[in-house]
Length: 206
Image 1 (spheres, rainbow, N blue to C red):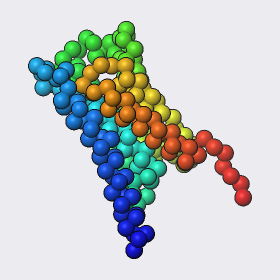
Image 2: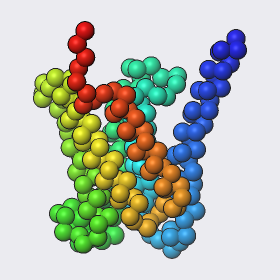
Image 3: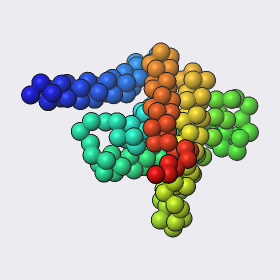
Image 4: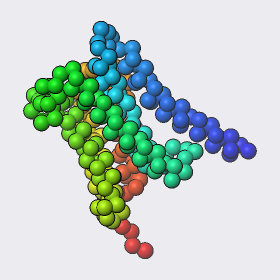
């Protein structure tokens, strides 16, 4: 009984911590003074970016099976759904910014923008699309599981690196402290799942 109670408490604490890690940056962004007098399309672009960062925290936690109460099958299934939502958030983010300033977004897409945060954002965006395309074509690619994991992990690292650097460099919707904490959690979760799954390690021979 004590063990069950401890397990339930641990589960509640983990989910509460995850909710705080995602909810606090969203709430801080909603209260940002930079949103004052902004057009709805600009606000939508900002919140789509914040949601994308939240999805990047969920993805490694689901892939590594770190969220209690979910089976491995459920974790993989939700991981795929969150991946789809991540693509949608990126599309909304870019499309909304395009509406506000098409020339600037075109320069970003073509890597012609002089601002470093734009370059990293473009890297993350194309990596997200590449990862989604690879996942959609996984059956046709007929890759061995180990090769697939390495490909998927490499693209995920590009997504995380580009997104984190982009978020840290830009002064936008996200509040600074909560943004730094969320970015640190995304990096930590990603590196942990890569280490735990031994993606690039040699296969042990028994």
